[in-house]
Image (cartoon, rainbow, N blue to C red; front, side, top):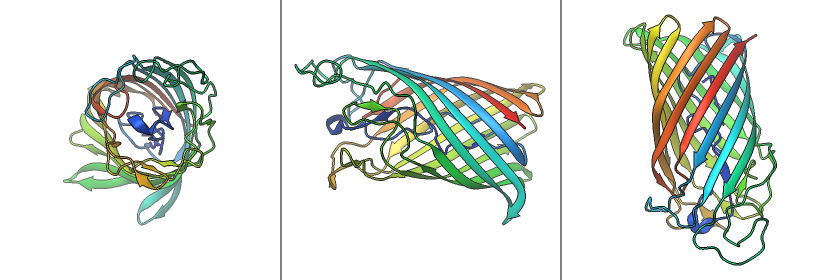
Length: 313
């Protein structure tokens, strides 16, 4: 259901890094690994999903994928609260739906970007890694069309088109490097599907593209990004699936500062890890996964562990 049952669009959230053009890190929170296994509501109705995602990184990578000195570290715990409604009404054969997500996050940081530079910003040296103690992230809303009855090569193929809009409603202060909110608008169309290759074996993908506006405070505009979540799932026992899951992000265009391109600012990262998913009842679903990042450029590289609980009213 989106940033649905399987986003956002968040959304995905990692964390928002702003105001550090020398090392980029300007992308807003994105759906990185938040949704994957059986990425669709099972039918019309109203669903509430709670995602609890813990992220930890003690490596910040530069444009070449090398460690940035200064021992910068970040950790956060995200609570993503998602409400999805799928109507019985159809357009073009797909059910009309709507998605709303509200992230709440606690962030902890330490270290500096390079050797400490004397100064007294909110937390020590001028180049210290600083985080906003506020907790509210940006609200996400999105209409979608969901098809439950299509087939691909004769096998069930559930698919969805969604257009998510991330509103700059989260808490933000430009004096901090890391904020719960991003202070900009993001538009994210995405296409998600689950294909049942056999009754036991399935694969789920979500393909997302993000366009963000300029941050009014820093005058920095993040570049456009393509990213995806993926999983290959197998039913080990009745209603219980094991899976290999992950995500990939590739920034397509440079960030901009006051309308000028910031060279060497493109971000990328890849992640993979194991997961389990249990349909405890027709109206209650549980999931747990962990994913390790690699090949990061211009962003942190770490590990995400996500617990998901979905209830159909």
